[in-house]
Amino acid sequence: DVKVTQSSRYLVKRTGEKVFLECVQDMDHENMFWYRQDPGLGLRLIYFSYDVKMKEKGDIPEGYSVSREKKERFSLILESASTNQTSMYLCASQWRGNQPQHFGDGTRLSIL
Amino acid sequence: DQQVKQNSPSLSVQEGRISILNCDYTNSMFDYFLWYKKYPAEGPTFLISISSIKDKNEDGRFTVFLNKSAKHLSLHIVPSQPGDSAVYFCAASDQAGTALIFGKGTTLSVSS
Image (cartoon, rainbow over all chains, first blue to last red; front, top):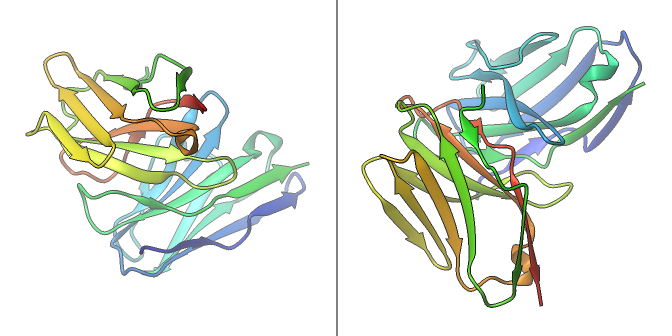
């Protein structure tokens, strides 16, 4: 089974802090993704990566950046956290295109 | 503008009966469609997928139907079980098959 591990289940930070969310997958998947889930809005894509050091913007990249230095690890960075970034963040990995994405259990991030 | 729409926020069904969840899409370039199930405080779990060259795909109690001319897909669960109670997300991607566009979800409640 594919295992996607997000480093924290719950996180509380203050406005203006730089926040790192980490994600690791154990199946040598090519593609990795970061989404946020908000009530009534479904899942929205922030960034994705199809190779080491490669990244593509999703639908809502503003206020976020990402890093993929190793194939198995994909980090989401909130450069200067704001209260409107309070959300559930979900990481996913995918072997290649036209295959299912597999999700981690999410990080519930609260920005105070 | 929403490219993937789940127009029913909720659905209630009795145990043993059929659950039918619906999804409409607007982008004719979408080529690959998936259904995910999500329990609270967990990441989405992949259920079933279908490519645009097919009109039906079955996996146990779950069947997905695709009507390309109507830009409509549906998920049938037969028979429904109380453990099926969750939020169901429809998702679609284009021929590259990487970034997914999700609907806002339908909450299914199966009562015993």
